[in-house]
Length: 219
Image 1 (cartoon, rainbow, N blue to C red):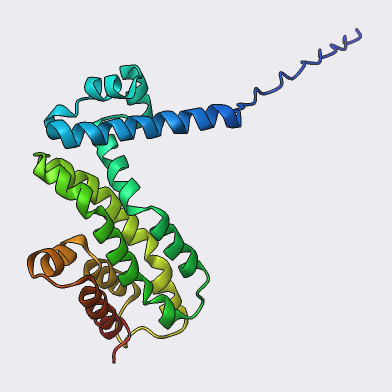
Image 2 (cartoon, rainbow, N blue to C red):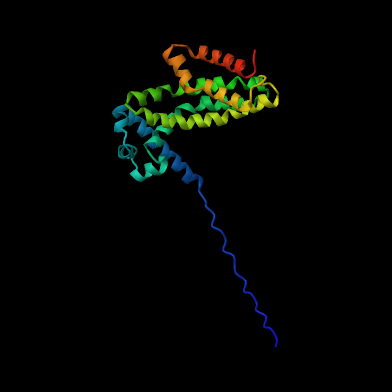
């Protein structure tokens, strides 16, 4: 008895759909996001944090409430946007471009104090507005915690460069050096020295450069 040969039918492959976003659509989304953020800033100045509700922001920006949620997710997301716009503007981008060109570890070590000063001074007007408008401290702290984690990650390149060049102080582990750098460049230390003790930005930056060099590589 002969076995019948069963021919398999070829199954045509369905081409995957490609997600395409036109530059015009992306530009429109960016403009909408900027308009919402600007409206939120005006409401914050006029009505305080409590008055900066999502519906109020939507009305002021001339968009639907779901559009605000789609762009920022929450009120905390809007606050993050306002702070980031102040922190990471042209001056920050210029400093970042300068840092990316540096290869010498000792020279690279001078940038964390410059970044700390630039960010903390730039955010002061918005932060003062938020605190003065009655934003609850835990909510603001949640926003700041997110950026603290980012700062911890971004500073790793400095530690790696010092370790590779064998410049870390004797007995100082990579993780301990990373924790020290992160702590010294904290927002809390800036507040204590500059806002509470009245140090100038120049004094803060000069002291921080010395402290980082002393703690990471020694005199």
